Structures are given as C-alpha cells and as structure tokens.
Image (cartoon, rainbow, N blue to C red; front, side):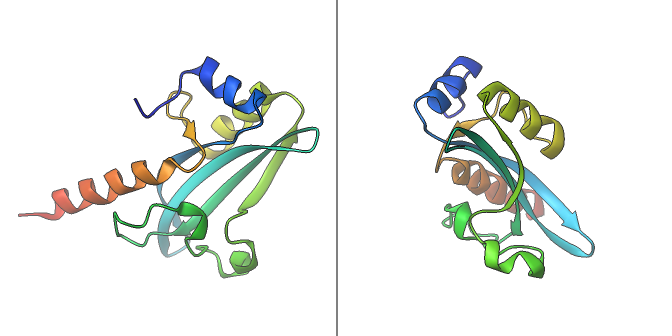
Length: 131
C-alpha cells in the first residue's frame, strides 16, 4: 500500500521523517507543469513547501526534487520549492498543505515516493492519448 493513513503520516513526522504528495497537473500562466507538496521536519517544527515544476513526461524520472521549476524566478530553488509555512504541530502543517495546495488528506506518502504517483500520471496521460 502506497498511501499512509493519517496516524502513519503523523507518526512519520513525529519520527522526524518527511512526507510528500504528487498533487497533479497545473497551469502557471501559459506554462503547463505539475505540482507536488512536502511536509518535512526542520529545527523545532515542520516546514510546508509547494513545488511547481516542469512536467518531464517520462515515467522513469521519479525524483521530483530535481525537476526544473516551472517559474524561471524559482530556478535557484530546485528541490526546496516555495515555503508556505512552518508549524510546531505536524497536524497544523498538514492542514495548511491540504488547504493551500490541493493536497488530499488520504494521498500522503513517505519522502521519495511521490514520484511513483507521477509515473502513474504520465502513463495514464499517454493511455488517454492513444486512439
């Protein structure tokens, strides 16, 4: 099972492990890309970051943290995304991520696993394009 239940998400964060989620396709102006969000431990709490990156359209590329940013002004931020909040309480960090980014409460995965959802997205997109 890929997705974590809420207690497992909170447990991972309590153990100082990050969680992430592939949110899906986005449009930024005329540019099309993908969005993923991360919640990860930092110092005395948890950072929430959103990542709007280019869609490389290749199911073999699963490390979303190295995808080029969609917005050229974010080019120096590859991997870190845009920080949208820092909380001491992991539940509050998850709430912000879900409210502000479109993340789903039941689709969180361990750090490094969101790329599997991206690969599924690419394959589904290709299947829809088949005659």
